[in-house]
Image 1 (spheres, chains in turn green, orange):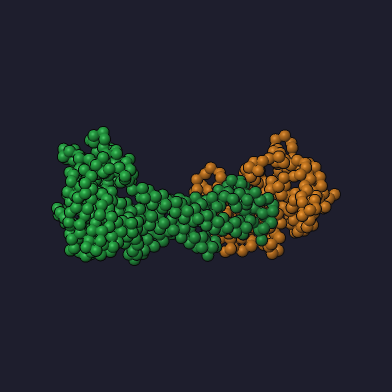
Image 2 (cartoon, each protein chain N blue to C red):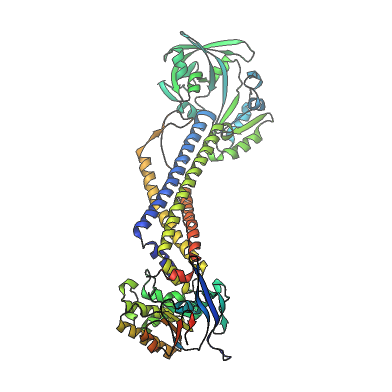
Length: 404
Length: 227
């Protein structure tokens, strides 16, 4: 207890220096909390965007579809799942809805000209999150149950020179290889902020796409769930229900960019943490070094009184640990304050894959605080070791001479 | 000591050290015997080697040559940890500059040598307070060193030196930083401890007042015992 008291009082001896050290540790911990919390929220936004606007939670399609080349004839990749299979999939606990998609390359024409584009047929009522998450900058989204309605990307619409309410002609190859066309009303213009998509994509309802391609088949079936966390578990259950030629894939397998984003943030967080830890390490090593220099006489005294070298190293490590824990506690308060402040400022950013800007949010993750305290405390202890070992090797008689 | 051996025996002790590039021989073959409960002054001018000898007997340093045994134990070849243990259990130190830990109170300073001894915190505190009482400082137990006078600080240091009941107390110029009256009081106290507790006391000094109070004075000159 006396050793603990001694450690604490030694820390408080030079209050200004201690305050600087604590600030350093607290700022370091806050930076870790912000960096991880921000990355966590952005990853969740990207995850939501990927699930809502593109992939659903999981999809199943033919092996040929997953493995085939875009040049393969569409008909070779299509599937016509039996109604009973769809019902079985829908009955799996945790499944929210199930619906098909059919995409194709064709022409879209306005009175001003024709452009090649990618058409995606989906079910606006079954895939509500996708329908609703598209940022409509003019007009409205597709109406559930509607036929002969189309919404086009902003860049594509600009090139077509069309206005909401115009009739556009959609042309494509049927599954038999002949050309077919239908007229649809332009009901809305969307924007994803991904230029390639905005310049070359239009959405129609699944029945419209099937009618254009003269088929009842779909290229894939999209499954949405109640909880993202159960995706893998439910994928396995669904895969067990599927015939051999159909393969289910989760959104993480499909959204390759998502994994890239996660990896990127992991590396970024690691870099931030390494830099912070180095700063904490150097700062505390410097402080402990100065403290040892100032307390050389006392080191001689406690060694004369029977402290071993180990006792001395332990004493300085304990001081480092206390400094780290105090800085950590201060860092928790500072981290929470900064997090709350930034969250309340509603700073908007565009995240990859999301159609609209989202407010920056920093999740005050328990793990960030816990790891932050562990890391900074560990660094504080490690930083104390080298100068403490050096101090423990001082000759006692030399150290005693420094008592004045 | 049960076999008639002196309590402290130094045989042909030499100590050399480097001062820059110069090799200095501080002790040149000292042979010395001290009995248990002795009250001895190691006297000599500055640079004579008295403090070096005191440091060697106090196990704060090891001789370059020769042997030193205390209470029958040869301390010349002990490891660093063994020396620390020996100092902690067998020796008490009183320094010229008092050397109290400034962030601890008087009683906490006195408790310090007891920290590694198996006893409860309250037992430790009791012993420290008893030691402070013995030196007449019960009333300043909670004071920090900077709240004490020089004489009081040295009394606290004496209490710290005797709290763990060592066999030998090493004092390096214990009165050098004190006024004459206070120095006299400290010497009275040390003499009383020697008498009543049978403590062996070795004091390095160049103060004739101290030499007059010890039972024996060993004069050191130029690294040797003066005749």
